[in-house]
Image 1: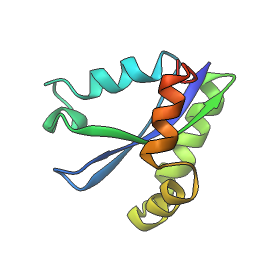
Image 2 (image 1 turned 180 degrees about the horizontal axis):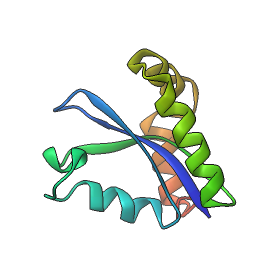
Image 3 (image 1 turned 30 degrees about the horizontal axis):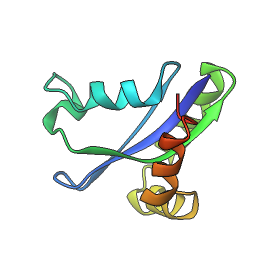
Image 4 (image 1 turned 45 degrees about the vertical axis):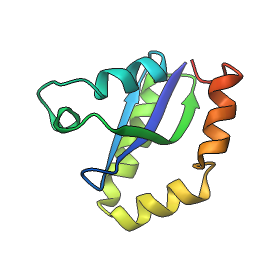
Length: 99
């Protein structure tokens, strides 16, 4: 399984769009560590949106599409319209739906 995901940092007031073929929560933990790179600037990243794909190529294609928008507003609309609330994500985590 592969994922395209959108993270949000309250501290930076920024979105981050990525893709992974590993466990999504492990990838989030890596983003929330002190490291070089954009997401290493803070440790408050939260998953706001994720979609599961069969292949990493599909996930990366979606990632490129979202990044090509270059619009915080459009990304914010996607997050709001696609199961981005904490209740939904909490239920996914509790049901082990997110790998």
